[in-house]
Length: 86
Image (cartoon, rainbow, N blue to C red; front, side, top):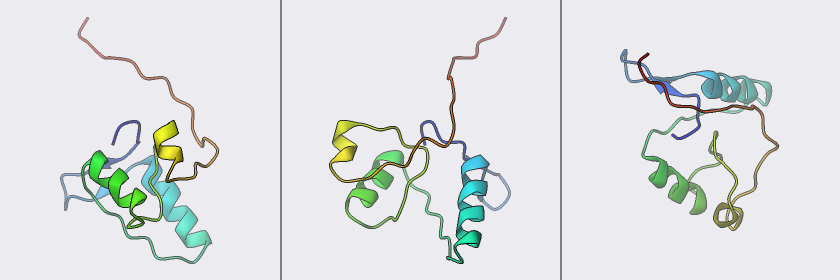
């Protein structure tokens, strides 16, 4: 997922990372079940638009997405760059 701090560990194909930690903490605080779904970014956006997902972390605001989704306040600030050998 672009801009999302989620990685898939080789062990058991489990999603891990800061966004997952935040979601797990939030679900525990709200006493909710958390079910994670892995798919392409485009497929996840479509599922959110079609009401098949309740939320999608790490998404950037766009006018198109505002037509079918609400956005939280940003919960992290990042600057992306490209790594290349010295």
